[in-house]
Image (cartoon, rainbow, N blue to C red; front, side, top):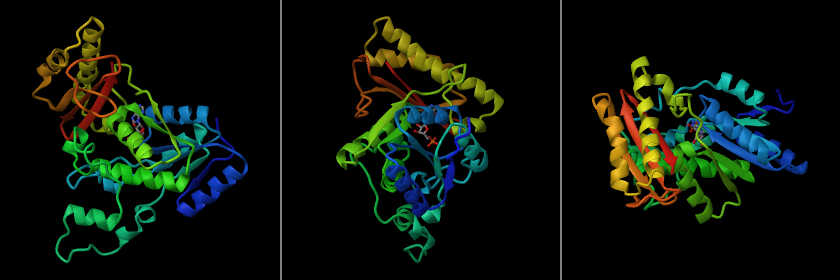
Length: 304
Ligand code: AMP
């Protein structure tokens, strides 16, 4: 289906004008932020947004602020032209795909330090004001990627201020990100409803991710174990096991045969709102996992 009203805007002022038009026509507005390299998971968020609002804005922006100094910013896949076709077919009304200079005008200025700037100097040169959530942004993904959530919250806050949507849709695939965004919206009084959408998976259970394309054929077969481990924990829980240590052991047993190829960052049972580990699992407990295979890092989770 091709939407007659599809538009693509590169600038904040063009987006604001298009949104003002939609508002004048009394339309409700949904926003789906992405980094592009779109797959069925992203498109499911668009479908969710279309169910809930009249005018859907997707954003594609590979946000340098959320990548650490040694992370995969340069090799992150960028497929803007084919993404745009997919979004138009999915019925998106407006695609906002700004440049780094549009989002971070200060990035064009010389680094603050005369010597080689360190990462935090570079970051403050990119955006002089940041949104962070001390106390919550340093566990799990935050522990392994120390500045990641500050980068995410800052860019999402900017996107929210630019688009001013009624609702915004995010994937449960990035469960910690979803909880951080909900916390930010509550703490900073954004009048935006945050909708979490279920994780879309391949037939064998692997969660769709823009990074899956980097997996070798052999690794692709091995990473099926991630969902197998999560599913084994779920089935053990459903049979009555509630002790978090024992449930975790069930998942580790599934991953252990692959320990020479998969490097586990964490496997934990947590409260999905606070990301504090639990000792007893209940319905609604989050099971989160992150691991590395070759140069690719994958995360996944289920809710019991
Ligand atoms: P990304 O482009 O990876 O930053 O993701 C953009 C949005 O898509 C985020 O809200 C993700 O949680 C969501 N997303 C990514 N992968 C999936 C998936 N397999 N199923 C559902 N949502 C997803």
